[in-house]
Image 1 (spheres, one colour):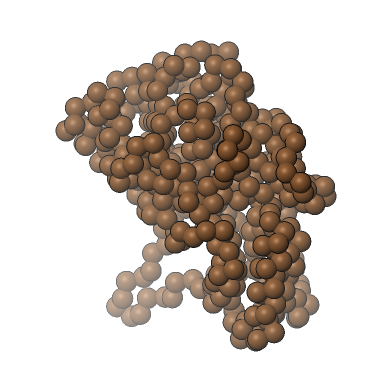
Image 2: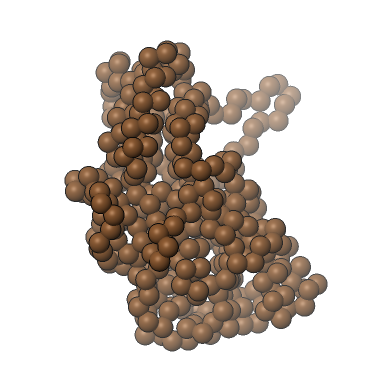
Length: 368
């Protein structure tokens, strides 16, 4: 799904927490790598490419006002990133706007003598606990949809290995985003006829210069869209195996379910193919590209949005609402009991399949 060295997966991780940014060129001019130079490059990219042109101009104006006021000049590392993040989100919150600081900046300090060394959590494993959770009921947790052929193969194998299931449970309560590859391995098993899932619209100026992260994907169809945007519909095309066509599908959601996880959620909800159980998702809608800003800093520039093709509504800020609202920690037990598992056993199974990562939203909710 990556079209060039500057393009990250179409839906990316909310906040880029687990996405490696581009390595900076070996040298920068001093003014380019200065705090003000980094801020100006960020402003220029937002003004040129942000999915909503007028909002992009407002972001740029706010950053340039900060430059003029000397707001960034003395800052570096996470302090610079956090200040720029705060300034742009004060204009209009966006679930994907966050700067990535240079590698090692703000790393945990070494432990004091006699103290406990700080511990970094290992990266999230893309797929966890895939298998039969109860007779006839298959379970899989996705923490990310990466651009990784091995993970796509694992998703396809899960579907094939559990094609006789009467119910499938997709746990995306700790899923922070990614691309379409694994979705396109899953959806052909679930639909009996070609089905329109969602619509994705990219700013036309970005699309025209080859900057759309979703251009050329087999599951995308170009359609007429709003002025200034290039719209593509994401479609599911059935495979030849019909065994899962009537299986019940449940999707477990939380406030940490972001970006590509929300795309998956809306596709299931919009088509009526799956039942969402848990809490509203994170509200990080916009897809886009990764850019270098100099000095090891990187930014994710949202260039498009994903929305319900019937209503035109996306999930930015609000999230995708569950069909059955329960605390995320209780979502699996609720689904299992609805499927006929005894409550005590459902609780035991839920405890054994509880995610180890947080299930809370990273940013406060806000409107665009």
